[in-house]
Image 1 (tube, rainbow, N blue to C red):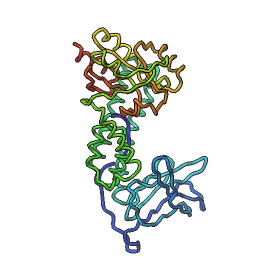
Image 2 (cartoon, one colour; image 1 turned 90 degrees about the horizontal axis):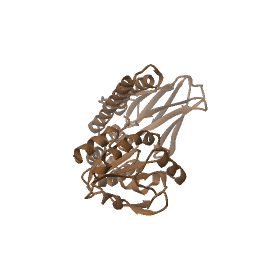
Image 3 (cartoon, rainbow, N blue to C red; image 1 turned 30 degrees about the horizontal axis):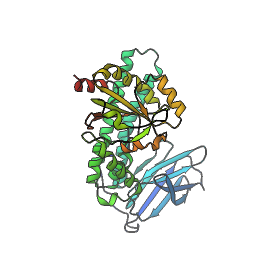
Image 4 (tube, one colour; image 1 turned 60 degrees about the vertical axis):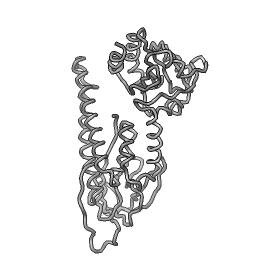
Length: 366
């Protein structure tokens, strides 16, 4: 799994006697705020932002009151100007919600969803701190040996995997509430396709109505068509010289074909390419072939990268970058991405990286 975000347990808060039945009150503080400054409550649906309410700061405090709506996604309390931007993620639900806003360290508590989300964020931050510490050592310690650098990479990957396992487990454990639904909406693209598909199948119907969740479900429904065990999907694009070719033209010629989604502008793709080149040299005489599918827009930069990276296998592209039709068919949302197909068109592996490519081919082409 790749990277993602969001939670943990629960508690119950009683409403104060003077509060409107079923309503909420947000009592907030902001470090360094001036009297008369405005604080805004906003909601985001995809890339669209909606300002729902505002409050005026007095003595470093502010207050929002209202009735919860039916939208499960959290709202964002935002205070800031050109020099400062402070925000807090708040689940609007019945009860008294406490918001302590400070740059980079806002805290929300007081109701079940907010308490659970706060617990998750605290644990998630611990994982991020571990990964950041490893990255700083890797990038700044000039005395490291190659063995030590490799060890740091392994340590970073281990923490990253533990982090994503935690995110997934907490999402699964809380699918029956707004926090779990939000975590799935936020991280569903980062989980393995089959894992996200399983979670969507368990999600209560009331959480499936948002446009963000609809986009996730559409992506997963499409990506499930090209998981391991399914037949590959053919498509047609042009070579760097402008000749129209089909993916099937290459698959039919090899015992195994690696469909390699990449781009000249993609740093991780360029770093990974030596592994792909090495695997091709090792197994090309045993029935292994590769076809590159580029997410480039500039044909000249594409051609130059092919030359610079010692790519000697066939290439195809529609020069549509992230709107690449081939990438859409295979549910590719990050590159490099690979799909390994046998001669009969069965998908036998996905997202092989580094030594995994040669290791898998070693099993298949003995």
